[in-house]
Length: 252
Image (cartoon, rainbow, N blue to C red):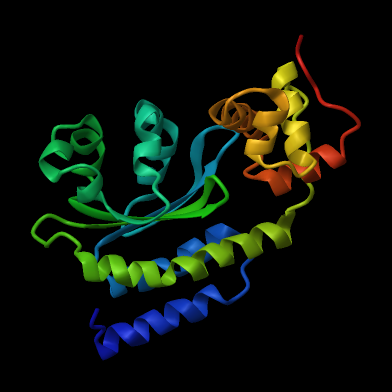
């Protein structure tokens, strides 16, 4: 991958921005937006944070778009297409046209009622992950009349992925992001509680499956349910939550 001197300077500037301190991830995601548009010769930028408890994208920021674009997406359009969210939420960098061919995209409701009116044509996404869930994303688009993104531009955006992910983690840890607390309404089934407790004790999924005489897939399903109900993203957060709780909330 060849990088021009100008793009190398822009890339270096983004990496420097990612190493700075930010009050919250919105500040970080907004700050790097203009430079990312410059790096990829793109027109439109948006970024969100995934809430695993609500199963929704939140805290959106946008550049070169009216903020009503963010509101429409958060409050309406993402919920219309919730069944396909996991199709789009791929770890790392992906071309939109690699996820769904552009001609097929043009036949969808979200394209005709949302993307096309707001000027979106070709897109590229970056989803940063910590464990099994995204902790922040970058969505960059070009207007009609410009070429689609290519492999070199996937490579460029991939170069900032580790720094972007670590920056999001630092913000989470610093503003902590306190130990997670179990929502009062969260109730695990007896088997979900059993699996979660064994996971918190440090047992791997295969060990839990052998201990309980169930399949590996069943263990993953119960763990995913526990993560979702408790609003945590990974085992580390689950352990912190359960160590601070006298007992599980279970339903009979």
